[in-house]
Image 1 (spheres, rainbow, N blue to C red):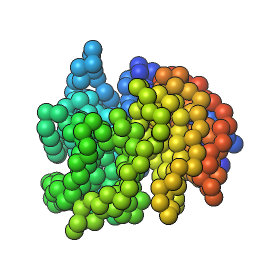
Image 2: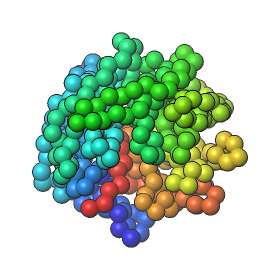
Image 3: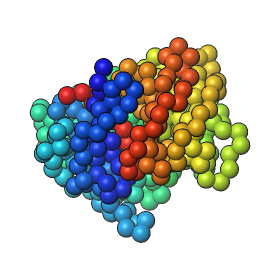
Length: 328
Protein backbone atom coordinates (compact mmCIF):
# COMPACT_ATOMS: atom_id res chain seq x y z
CA UNK A 1 0.00 0.00 0.00
CA UNK A 2 1.41 3.39 -1.04
CA UNK A 3 0.52 6.50 0.93
CA UNK A 4 1.17 10.17 0.24
CA UNK A 5 2.46 12.70 2.75
CA UNK A 6 3.06 16.43 2.70
CA UNK A 7 5.84 17.71 4.97
CA UNK A 8 5.98 21.32 6.08
CA UNK A 9 9.43 22.60 7.02
CA UNK A 10 10.26 25.18 9.62
CA UNK A 11 12.88 26.91 7.50
CA UNK A 12 13.42 28.31 4.03
CA UNK A 13 13.32 24.85 2.50
CA UNK A 14 9.64 24.87 1.53
CA UNK A 15 7.17 21.99 1.37
CA UNK A 16 7.89 18.37 0.41
CA UNK A 17 5.68 15.68 -1.08
CA UNK A 18 6.67 12.14 -0.10
CA UNK A 19 5.43 8.66 -0.84
CA UNK A 20 5.49 6.00 1.86
CA UNK A 21 5.69 2.43 0.56
CA UNK A 22 6.83 -0.80 2.22
CA UNK A 23 8.14 1.03 5.27
CA UNK A 24 10.17 3.76 3.61
CA UNK A 25 9.77 7.27 2.17
CA UNK A 26 10.69 8.47 -1.31
CA UNK A 27 10.63 12.04 -2.60
CA UNK A 28 7.89 12.99 -5.06
CA UNK A 29 8.06 16.77 -5.27
CA UNK A 30 9.20 19.98 -3.57
CA UNK A 31 7.87 23.52 -3.44
CA UNK A 32 10.38 26.07 -2.18
CA UNK A 33 8.17 29.13 -2.76
CA UNK A 34 7.00 29.21 0.87
CA UNK A 35 9.13 29.04 4.01
CA UNK A 36 8.34 28.31 7.65
CA UNK A 37 5.27 26.18 6.93
CA UNK A 38 4.52 24.86 10.40
CA UNK A 39 1.06 23.30 9.89
CA UNK A 40 -1.00 21.79 7.06
CA UNK A 41 -4.43 20.31 6.33
CA UNK A 42 -6.09 18.72 3.31
CA UNK A 43 -9.52 18.84 1.69
CA UNK A 44 -10.83 17.59 -1.64
CA UNK A 45 -7.97 18.29 -4.05
CA UNK A 46 -6.30 21.13 -2.16
CA UNK A 47 -3.65 21.41 0.51
CA UNK A 48 -3.76 24.32 2.96
CA UNK A 49 -0.86 25.57 5.02
CA UNK A 50 0.24 28.50 7.13
CA UNK A 51 3.39 30.54 6.74
CA UNK A 52 5.01 32.19 9.74
CA UNK A 53 6.94 35.41 9.29
CA UNK A 54 9.22 36.62 12.04
CA UNK A 55 12.34 38.72 12.29
CA UNK A 56 14.60 38.69 15.33
CA UNK A 57 11.86 36.82 17.23
CA UNK A 58 9.31 39.55 16.47
CA UNK A 59 6.24 37.97 14.89
CA UNK A 60 4.66 39.50 11.80
CA UNK A 61 1.37 38.94 10.02
CA UNK A 62 1.32 35.46 8.51
CA UNK A 63 -0.11 33.94 5.37
CA UNK A 64 -2.53 31.19 4.39
CA UNK A 65 -1.49 29.16 1.35
CA UNK A 66 -3.59 26.96 -0.92
CA UNK A 67 -1.59 24.42 -2.95
CA UNK A 68 -2.57 21.73 -5.45
CA UNK A 69 -1.28 18.22 -4.63
CA UNK A 70 1.02 18.31 -7.66
CA UNK A 71 2.45 21.65 -6.44
CA UNK A 72 1.80 23.27 -9.84
CA UNK A 73 -0.77 25.77 -8.56
CA UNK A 74 -0.49 27.79 -5.37
CA UNK A 75 -1.90 31.01 -3.92
CA UNK A 76 -1.19 32.97 -0.75
CA UNK A 77 -3.68 34.99 1.33
CA UNK A 78 -2.94 37.51 4.07
CA UNK A 79 -3.73 36.65 7.69
CA UNK A 80 -4.66 39.34 10.20
CA UNK A 81 -2.96 37.49 13.06
CA UNK A 82 0.75 37.28 13.71
CA UNK A 83 2.86 34.14 13.95
CA UNK A 84 0.33 31.49 12.79
CA UNK A 85 1.20 28.05 14.16
CA UNK A 86 -1.76 25.75 13.47
CA UNK A 87 -4.46 25.33 10.82
CA UNK A 88 -7.65 23.26 11.18
CA UNK A 89 -10.18 22.28 8.52
CA UNK A 90 -13.91 22.23 9.28
CA UNK A 91 -15.25 20.38 6.24
CA UNK A 92 -18.80 20.42 7.63
CA UNK A 93 -18.98 24.19 7.21
CA UNK A 94 -16.18 24.76 4.68
CA UNK A 95 -14.10 26.76 7.15
CA UNK A 96 -10.39 27.01 7.95
CA UNK A 97 -9.47 27.97 11.53
CA UNK A 98 -5.99 29.38 12.14
CA UNK A 99 -4.31 29.74 15.54
CA UNK A 100 -1.95 32.72 15.72
CA UNK A 101 0.70 32.31 18.40
CA UNK A 102 2.43 35.66 17.91
CA UNK A 103 -0.46 37.89 18.96
CA UNK A 104 -2.84 35.34 20.50
CA UNK A 105 -5.66 35.49 17.95
CA UNK A 106 -7.76 33.23 15.73
CA UNK A 107 -8.51 33.80 12.03
CA UNK A 108 -11.24 31.94 10.14
CA UNK A 109 -11.46 31.71 6.34
CA UNK A 110 -14.48 30.64 4.30
CA UNK A 111 -14.10 28.12 1.46
CA UNK A 112 -16.41 27.51 -1.49
CA UNK A 113 -17.78 24.08 -2.38
CA UNK A 114 -14.66 23.35 -4.43
CA UNK A 115 -12.29 24.17 -1.57
CA UNK A 116 -11.21 27.54 -2.96
CA UNK A 117 -10.58 30.29 -0.42
CA UNK A 118 -13.28 32.98 -0.54
CA UNK A 119 -12.37 35.39 2.24
CA UNK A 120 -11.48 35.98 5.87
CA UNK A 121 -14.78 36.08 7.77
CA UNK A 122 -13.77 36.05 11.45
CA UNK A 123 -10.98 37.35 13.66
CA UNK A 124 -10.96 36.71 17.41
CA UNK A 125 -8.64 38.44 19.86
CA UNK A 126 -7.79 37.41 23.42
CA UNK A 127 -5.53 39.15 25.97
CA UNK A 128 -2.15 40.78 25.46
CA UNK A 129 -0.54 37.70 27.09
CA UNK A 130 -2.35 35.12 24.94
CA UNK A 131 -0.49 32.68 22.73
CA UNK A 132 -3.08 30.60 20.89
CA UNK A 133 -1.34 27.37 19.98
CA UNK A 134 -3.71 24.57 18.99
CA UNK A 135 -7.25 23.95 17.75
CA UNK A 136 -9.38 20.80 17.59
CA UNK A 137 -12.96 19.88 16.77
CA UNK A 138 -15.18 17.55 18.76
CA UNK A 139 -16.06 14.34 16.94
CA UNK A 140 -19.49 15.69 15.97
CA UNK A 141 -17.85 18.99 14.91
CA UNK A 142 -20.17 21.06 17.08
CA UNK A 143 -17.43 22.30 19.42
CA UNK A 144 -14.09 24.01 18.86
CA UNK A 145 -11.37 23.49 21.48
CA UNK A 146 -8.59 26.07 21.83
CA UNK A 147 -5.38 26.06 23.88
CA UNK A 148 -3.93 29.38 25.04
CA UNK A 149 -0.35 28.71 26.08
CA UNK A 150 0.26 32.30 27.20
CA UNK A 151 -2.73 32.57 29.51
CA UNK A 152 -2.63 28.90 30.61
CA UNK A 153 -6.20 28.35 29.47
CA UNK A 154 -8.28 25.77 27.63
CA UNK A 155 -11.46 26.98 25.91
CA UNK A 156 -14.47 25.25 24.35
CA UNK A 157 -16.75 27.06 21.92
CA UNK A 158 -20.07 26.10 20.40
CA UNK A 159 -19.80 26.79 16.67
CA UNK A 160 -22.72 28.80 15.32
CA UNK A 161 -22.54 29.36 11.57
CA UNK A 162 -25.43 30.79 9.61
CA UNK A 163 -25.52 32.69 6.32
CA UNK A 164 -21.72 32.77 6.14
CA UNK A 165 -21.57 34.44 9.57
CA UNK A 166 -19.59 32.74 12.34
CA UNK A 167 -20.06 33.03 16.09
CA UNK A 168 -17.99 31.15 18.68
CA UNK A 169 -20.03 30.88 21.88
CA UNK A 170 -17.94 30.00 24.94
CA UNK A 171 -19.33 26.91 26.67
CA UNK A 172 -16.31 25.78 28.67
CA UNK A 173 -13.12 27.13 30.16
CA UNK A 174 -10.36 25.62 32.30
CA UNK A 175 -7.51 27.60 33.80
CA UNK A 176 -4.26 25.72 34.39
CA UNK A 177 -1.74 26.60 37.13
CA UNK A 178 0.67 29.41 36.27
CA UNK A 179 3.57 28.51 33.95
CA UNK A 180 1.94 25.20 32.93
CA UNK A 181 1.54 26.29 29.27
CA UNK A 182 -1.05 24.02 27.60
CA UNK A 183 0.25 23.39 24.08
CA UNK A 184 -1.54 20.70 22.05
CA UNK A 185 -4.59 18.51 22.58
CA UNK A 186 -6.14 15.29 21.31
CA UNK A 187 -9.82 14.31 21.27
CA UNK A 188 -11.53 10.94 21.63
CA UNK A 189 -15.33 10.87 22.08
CA UNK A 190 -15.93 13.16 25.09
CA UNK A 191 -12.33 12.91 26.33
CA UNK A 192 -9.88 15.78 25.92
CA UNK A 193 -6.16 15.15 26.46
CA UNK A 194 -3.76 18.10 26.75
CA UNK A 195 0.05 18.12 26.75
CA UNK A 196 1.64 21.07 28.54
CA UNK A 197 4.82 22.62 27.24
CA UNK A 198 6.58 24.00 30.31
CA UNK A 199 5.44 21.55 33.01
CA UNK A 200 5.52 18.47 30.71
CA UNK A 201 2.26 17.07 32.06
CA UNK A 202 -0.63 15.15 30.56
CA UNK A 203 -4.12 16.36 31.49
CA UNK A 204 -7.23 14.28 30.93
CA UNK A 205 -10.65 15.99 30.88
CA UNK A 206 -14.12 14.86 30.05
CA UNK A 207 -16.29 17.48 28.40
CA UNK A 208 -19.97 18.10 27.87
CA UNK A 209 -21.76 21.16 26.54
CA UNK A 210 -23.87 21.36 29.69
CA UNK A 211 -21.17 20.99 32.36
CA UNK A 212 -17.98 22.03 30.55
CA UNK A 213 -14.61 20.54 31.48
CA UNK A 214 -14.16 17.98 34.24
CA UNK A 215 -10.57 17.20 35.22
CA UNK A 216 -10.17 13.43 35.51
CA UNK A 217 -6.41 13.08 35.84
CA UNK A 218 -3.16 15.04 35.64
CA UNK A 219 0.16 13.20 35.61
CA UNK A 220 3.77 14.11 34.84
CA UNK A 221 4.98 12.74 31.52
CA UNK A 222 8.60 12.63 32.70
CA UNK A 223 9.85 12.20 36.26
CA UNK A 224 13.29 13.75 35.79
CA UNK A 225 12.41 17.04 34.10
CA UNK A 226 15.37 19.33 33.45
CA UNK A 227 15.80 22.76 31.84
CA UNK A 228 15.09 22.47 28.14
CA UNK A 229 12.60 19.60 28.48
CA UNK A 230 9.36 20.79 26.90
CA UNK A 231 6.20 19.04 25.81
CA UNK A 232 5.35 19.33 22.13
CA UNK A 233 3.00 17.11 20.10
CA UNK A 234 0.28 14.69 21.19
CA UNK A 235 -1.66 12.09 19.19
CA UNK A 236 -4.22 9.47 20.20
CA UNK A 237 -4.81 6.18 18.39
CA UNK A 238 -8.06 5.77 16.48
CA UNK A 239 -9.33 3.27 19.06
CA UNK A 240 -8.69 5.76 21.87
CA UNK A 241 -6.46 3.33 23.81
CA UNK A 242 -2.98 4.83 23.36
CA UNK A 243 -1.53 8.33 23.60
CA UNK A 244 1.80 9.35 22.05
CA UNK A 245 3.70 12.51 23.02
CA UNK A 246 6.98 14.05 21.94
CA UNK A 247 9.25 15.74 24.48
CA UNK A 248 11.92 18.14 23.27
CA UNK A 249 15.10 18.16 25.33
CA UNK A 250 14.63 14.50 26.13
CA UNK A 251 14.31 13.94 22.36
CA UNK A 252 11.97 11.06 23.04
CA UNK A 253 8.45 9.81 22.48
CA UNK A 254 6.36 8.74 25.47
CA UNK A 255 3.50 6.27 25.24
CA UNK A 256 0.58 6.01 27.67
CA UNK A 257 -2.47 3.76 27.79
CA UNK A 258 -5.82 5.39 28.55
CA UNK A 259 -7.72 2.45 30.06
CA UNK A 260 -8.61 1.94 32.83
CA UNK A 261 -6.59 5.03 33.74
CA UNK A 262 -3.66 6.93 32.28
CA UNK A 263 -0.64 4.66 32.61
CA UNK A 264 2.89 5.04 31.28
CA UNK A 265 3.95 2.14 29.03
CA UNK A 266 7.01 3.17 27.00
CA UNK A 267 9.62 5.79 26.26
CA UNK A 268 11.71 5.57 23.11
CA UNK A 269 14.31 7.84 21.58
CA UNK A 270 13.16 9.82 18.56
CA UNK A 271 16.63 9.24 17.05
CA UNK A 272 16.93 12.93 16.28
CA UNK A 273 16.85 16.40 17.81
CA UNK A 274 13.79 18.52 18.65
CA UNK A 275 10.83 16.27 17.86
CA UNK A 276 8.28 18.84 16.68
CA UNK A 277 5.47 16.72 15.24
CA UNK A 278 4.32 13.11 15.38
CA UNK A 279 1.81 11.44 13.08
CA UNK A 280 0.34 8.04 12.26
CA UNK A 281 0.18 6.59 8.80
CA UNK A 282 -3.31 5.79 7.53
CA UNK A 283 -3.11 2.16 8.68
CA UNK A 284 -1.81 3.17 12.13
CA UNK A 285 0.84 0.48 11.78
CA UNK A 286 3.49 3.21 11.75
CA UNK A 287 4.23 6.39 13.66
CA UNK A 288 6.46 9.15 12.29
CA UNK A 289 8.37 11.84 14.18
CA UNK A 290 9.59 15.07 12.56
CA UNK A 291 12.93 15.97 14.16
CA UNK A 292 13.32 19.63 13.31
CA UNK A 293 16.90 20.35 14.35
CA UNK A 294 18.48 17.11 13.12
CA UNK A 295 16.74 17.19 9.74
CA UNK A 296 15.22 13.71 9.98
CA UNK A 297 11.91 11.90 10.09
CA UNK A 298 11.98 8.85 12.34
CA UNK A 299 9.94 5.85 11.23
CA UNK A 300 8.55 3.57 13.94
CA UNK A 301 6.61 0.35 13.56
CA UNK A 302 3.57 0.31 15.85
CA UNK A 303 1.93 -2.67 17.52
CA UNK A 304 -1.82 -1.97 17.45
CA UNK A 305 -2.54 -4.38 20.31
CA UNK A 306 0.06 -3.11 22.79
CA UNK A 307 0.62 0.40 21.43
CA UNK A 308 4.37 -0.12 21.66
CA UNK A 309 6.77 1.41 19.14
CA UNK A 310 9.80 -0.18 17.47
CA UNK A 311 12.36 2.00 15.74
CA UNK A 312 12.69 1.19 12.06
CA UNK A 313 14.65 3.83 10.10
CA UNK A 314 15.35 7.51 9.34
CA UNK A 315 14.47 9.68 6.36
CA UNK A 316 16.69 12.74 5.92
CA UNK A 317 15.28 16.12 4.91
CA UNK A 318 15.66 19.76 5.93
CA UNK A 319 13.99 20.94 9.16
CA UNK A 320 10.72 18.94 9.09
CA UNK A 321 7.99 20.59 11.18
CA UNK A 322 4.67 18.98 10.26
CA UNK A 323 3.57 15.67 8.73
CA UNK A 324 0.28 15.43 6.82
CA UNK A 325 -1.07 12.19 5.31
CA UNK A 326 -3.44 12.84 2.41
CA UNK A 327 -5.41 11.04 -0.28
CA UNK A 328 -5.79 12.21 -3.86
